Image: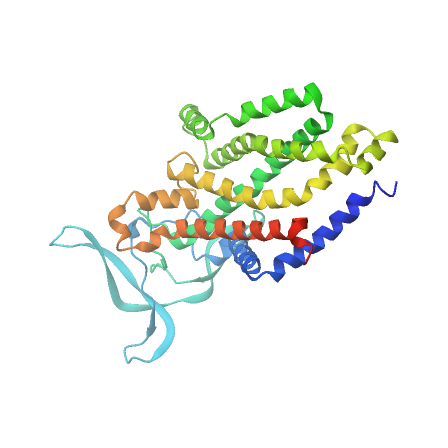
Length: 370
């Protein structure tokens, strides 16, 4: 019985090693801090942003970033303020331009009342971290063609783009772990049949499958339903690769003494797999999770970029990037429209850095001297 409890002890030690190793490494520590800031901002986007998810002002369509002034007419420093902008037509180029109206100053205030919201889905409120009074608008990164604040939409887009990775893990990982564990533990014909089925799942081209589904989906399907469908489809396609790796690890683990000891005292096979075999793969699973989350984020962003993912008016980093690419002439004058792509890059880089450090910490050959 003492031997059967060994996996639990090893799991606890590795958990402490993981935390210590991640925080000791400067790169992974920086990546953890950046990701914490991203997820914190996404969770409290309603409060942090000056405008709500559904806010729009058509008179500010494609408006540039609002200039913020910190000096008065005498050149002395003062509290930040902005001027109201109005849309006019350039008589020479016949293009719409925005002209500042310096007749009235609108100070940027903290804790301003604005659009009502439910933070975290259940906390009602109408207080925003900063903003200006109407009719002036504060667009730190300009506005899209419908007059929606790009800065605020970055935060709301993060809610979907950052969430899809962990939602995908909640579906794909349990299936892949249990499926691969049973296949490797049972062996023989059961193993062959289960692996052939997993390989058939892996052969399904996910992009073409989603394109085909997009063609037959109802036109009135909401963005939330589409988001859920994308998450489920990507998850049910991605579990097979994990199952193959877990199956290969279980083939060797099942011969260990503590597994055989539990089997000899009559422990049911499924309980033996869950309690003794699968915990031995925890080191790999932790690393795989940090590398799988970016793949889900990239998949959602790519699908939204080609118009198959989250649809307007809901925001995601992918469809915000698509909106920027639809107006290439504005990119030179408003490079901040590419901010969603930069945030996607930073997020994936952080997850990959954490995965690399985890691999070094949890690999017995590399962690022996730590």
